[in-house]
Image (cartoon, rainbow, N blue to C red; front, side):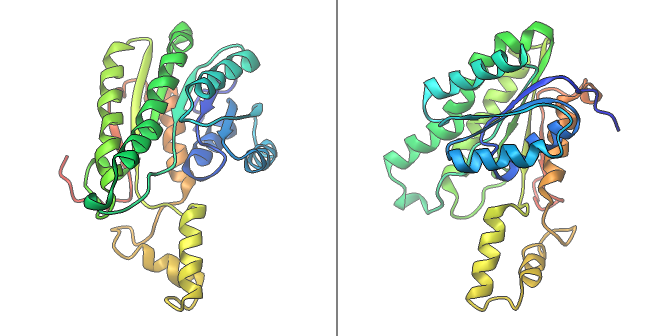
Length: 262
């Protein structure tokens, strides 16, 4: 299916690895010009070079820390300067640390809010005038934890819900020029999951990587965890005219793992 976004300009935050990178890859494969972002310059450069090998559009890397307001502003400015505008903003960020509530400090809460919520606030604030020019999209990559609390993830369970409230509000305030949606990923085979499985193999919990990967998916109705590109392709769809009547929604991408009715 042609998503009809070739030549569009897209900015994907926290996209040098993980699910953000999968979203950027899906957009680039569809011909969009894409800005990748990350804090680690070496990792970012490697991700840009890798994506350029298969991208149909231009790929640019812009280093920046999502907890620094000036860096977020610079990301949007660099995208507009490089591509002449901005059509799609995809916000992603690394997860906050795990741990029980009573061991979580005030500083932990403020850092999580700054990373997960204020990064989105600042990015959308800077991007909105450009997105409104020709009609654009915002897609927020959050977590299935906003639908169903996950043990030992009190920060993710609590703070990420603010992003969903913001996304729903923006879907009305920025409409009709801009559509805003969110995706709620469950476990996917990212580098973090691969590292955890390999550590399990080293500890003797699994005989092989494949056994560990299979074990990770046993509780899922599809009997597997996700391929990151399944999440990325969903993001690209939400950016495309093919999803033109989808606005203000949050779509779980987790194979049916969640048990929530809504």
